[in-house]
Length: 117
Image 1 (cartoon, helix red, strand yellow):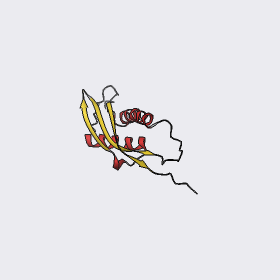
Image 2 (cartoon, helix red, strand yellow):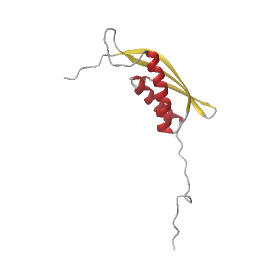
Image 3 (cartoon, helix red, strand yellow):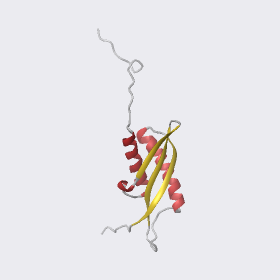
Image 4 (cartoon, rainbow, N blue to C red):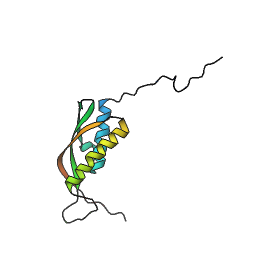
């Protein structure tokens, strides 16, 4: 006779995500939020009472002078939105809760979008 294992009896495992992997996820999410290359984003992580504290040094994509693009809000609005996006996406992707996101803008990435013919 074989014993069937129910969900309550099953052993629960645990996933361990390394700090390097979390750092790469934070870097990619930050880059996506600010429309820059992930290779240009530098991330430092610290433990703050069980939650992560993030310092990201990154450029931000801006439109050239005289070119109006459809970006909503000021730079400050975009950075505030990016902080919220980083917190939510990192929690969703890694399960790591972020307490603080400090975005340090290192430069402006001024690129015109190329038109598709």
